[in-house]
Image (cartoon, rainbow, N blue to C red; front, side, top):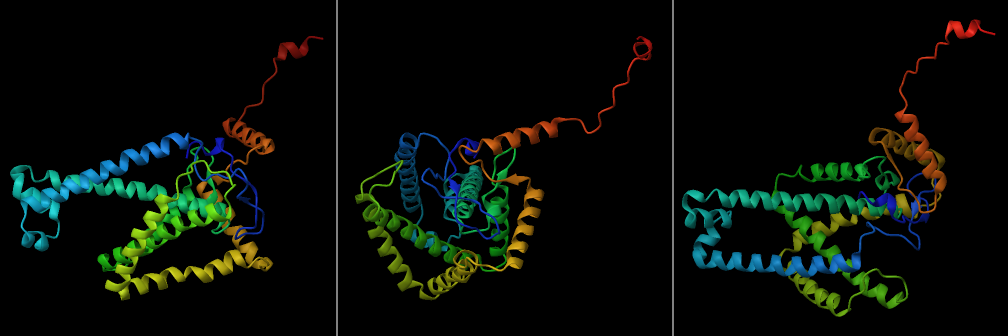
Length: 310
């Protein structure tokens, strides 16, 4: 996020949920920093996926080897039971390791979820304030706060396992739709610039496994999947109200504008700089110079002797 201001951020695009133009997708529009993605992203994938697969497979092999099927089914936390059975006085290592792994996963989800809201706002599908970043730290504070609030609302439910099933099904559904969109874009728009281009064999294989698991989930848990789909479809009227409806009344735009301005002042956020906008850069420099000036500047007192001299 620290490199956002150094990256091309698009050009003024279609109207968002407010009354003025906001940065939207353009020919040089990126949703990430300007790192060498062609080298770093494949390297990260080829290293992380085999490593995680190796750890998970051999962890399960260890569980099955050390514990009976009855113990596995009766345990609420297999790793903790495994530690209590084999590690003795050092069994506390397992719950601490699980907690650290959980915090690491939550940390990654926090960054990725807020980044999704940030990118969606830049596309015009969410309120424009979510596409703003802090003037100094370059962090998407409104998107992070929105992620926090939505997470707290989901935690209101008392049945955590049902919530996990809802969220897991919806996330997995969108994963498949996203991968399918890659195939559709490769077919309909084969000439658009792609920072990273891979063979279509990989998304096709993924979609085959995705379709199998999705059908199995619908067959085994039809009620949970149906409720999850109903929750997802609640976003359709919001889309038509905020995005598809272009000619909104002035009072609606005034309210959204007021909310946006208040949010900007509270979070101290602005739009990321658009490439080639030298005027905005000069305005930011002037604002920083004004902020660095002291609040009170005493007026210089002239020397009385110098005033008396002709």
